[in-house]
Image 1: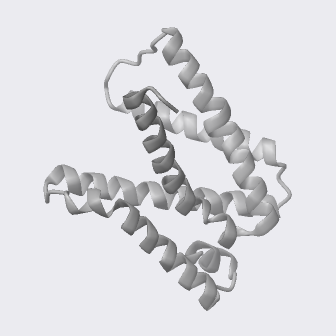
Image 2: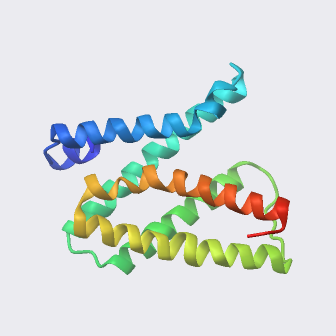
Length: 167
């Protein structure tokens, strides 16, 4: 919401600000057991910085998507360009690392990659961007709060199924 306020002059009501703080607080509560076990190491600090940077980049992506929608850029074309820029950036970082590029051709890897590309990226972003256009950034932003909670529930359910063999 801060980005929408800064870049588009969108009002931030007390209700939205309070909801944002409650959402952040909820995430802290959900992940508190893991946060409490963190050690003050360099690796932990790096992880925290990367986490904050990823949240910032995701927020900037939403701001660009909102700007594109307001400018009349069609959803699928805007997504295609964004994903192309992301893929080229990832390739550039990979090449800059100096490590050899490789690709695992096992069916398990290829199928999981296809799943992530089709459902985890294309379908998910199309859904989010449609939601962003229909209900606005403030309410669409709740996805950032709900995804980790739903992921924890699914992880716990699948872990229980794997350990007990029962659904």
